[in-house]
Image (spheres, helix red, strand yellow):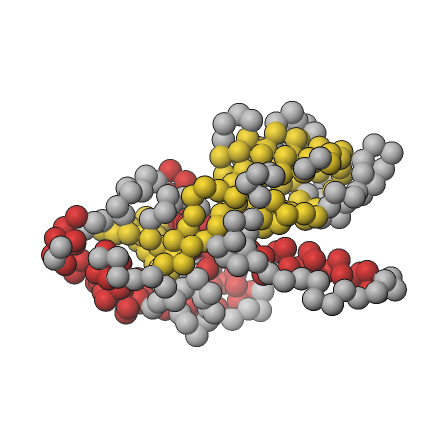
Length: 314
């Protein structure tokens, strides 16, 4: 198959995000008002301008590569939940790691290329390429000549049929700073719990939120005089077909327990959570609280590794 044939058959979808400056201008209506707000608080407005210019430059480079490619579409991050990706699409995310994760959970195994718009600013664990690389990367991806790394995703299936995936982690709990009330079941153990919620982490997310919870718990135990556990935390591989759950701040009462607070979740041993929260329970993924599922009293979520895996081009 020639490169020209490949270019004619495969669409490239470029996912973009708004910069901090874009968000400020949207909030305060003009660039001048946004500048006044930031400088009035004593912050450096030039940093917002530099970030915005760097992103605009990277976007121009990416679009030039796409124009040479032929068939492409640009989609803002805010539209991902309702965008329909074709099975043959090649997807490109121009932004931070969070944009790559937020894009991947809406895909069905299509190859995903992460572009770092400003390497001097962003470490980019999921951003192995720069915009200038895109012209050379796309033909190789279309011809299956680029390796991909498999990424296990978490999946929550609600009793009303709704489904939500996560590349890093799922949060199950209250919308605001109140107690989460729920029934938690894993294996043969079931508990009624009251906590500030729980997270379920993938291998990719096991170096992020989950790590902070475990690290904090071990530090508290050490301060209380309990013996240190050497090598207690080892992150999982991205492709490992397992998840880990951790309950945040479990609170034992006469009607709630706090022993089922940590465990490993696999396809044949999913985690089950039944909400006891009247109106403020939610489930969201990868830090995107705006894109959440309602999790009100009586609803059950069954959580395990998703059958669909992410495919990050490397």
